[in-house]
Length: 406
Image 1 (cartoon, one colour):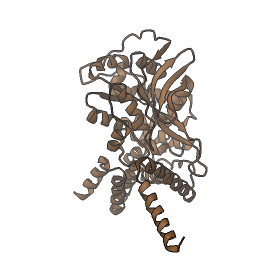
Image 2 (cartoon, one colour; image 1 turned 180 degrees about the vertical axis):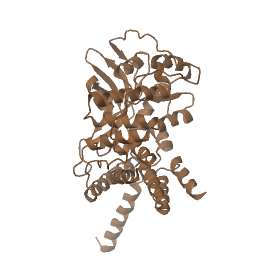
Image 3 (tube, one colour; image 1 turned 60 degrees about the vertical axis):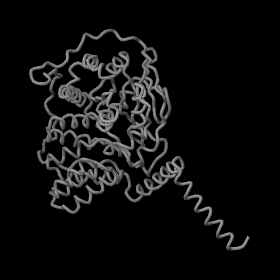
Image 4 (cartoon, one colour; image 1 turned 135 degrees about the vertical axis):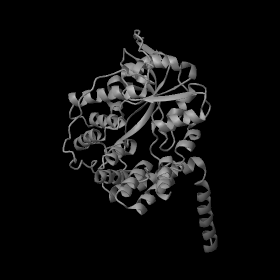
């Protein structure tokens, strides 16, 4: 073969490869592998040490707040919160109809899990209908519960969505027994490292559809591992704890009264957070070396704008040790340290988070606010524009840009 023909063949193969690389299934696989390589190289450049420990608190307190008891406050002024019905004995086993399974695409466990929950009620879309709205960039590694609830309320408006924190296995069983599958956020462990010294810890969503007291097992629809995955009662509690025991419900409007009865005082968001706060305070008292208990305490205190106490709780969690990817999924420390004027801590944590996840729009947002507080307006604007690049339409970043430009 002549050199000219050889060159034409090579060019033809390159063109064919470029064309094939744009075919969606091939493009997705290639993109995922490129991300793996980039992530590993970044881990070499920025070694993955532990989450930075806290700087000395200006208050010097580092004390947990005074415990508060579980309450059932009023909702809407003089209206009492929905009463909790006397619980009926639960059946020993419940198994709900399993919706059509959805295998997740890249970084798409949230949309894929939500897809299965919506299909339980007859929705006929797929994960990409959801991700195109709430995470249009496939490399976005995190979807928050409020983003999933936003999708349901605005794009599947004949259904409703609510999420709460401080759930318990007993509550999950009561919801399943009443016919409601439940989405939870839980711990996920990678099989292979994504960087040197990777602790392999990550977050994941799962749709629970069954339980069995005899075997002490829940059954979940897992968008990564497959349908009908067993998870023991003990493992569920252990894996659920790092995420403040958050749970999400999708339901028909006519079922809201029944759900109010099942949740009781926890239907009211303030009461739910007060109860979660009391539970996290009790957890830190009984297990003072549990970093996740302290992290949950900080998050629940943040809800009530108790910023100094929240910062103290987060300080303790950091000093005890948190997983390397923790700040990919939960951003309470960013807000708390900003509000407590702990800007050095905020910069340290956001920089660490961006070394692990450089496209995290939340870390970019709050590093921008830290820079703004320090008078670096140009640096803040750069971060906020980058956040919008990685999460098109991100309202918090757009607000920040509008704030400094107006």
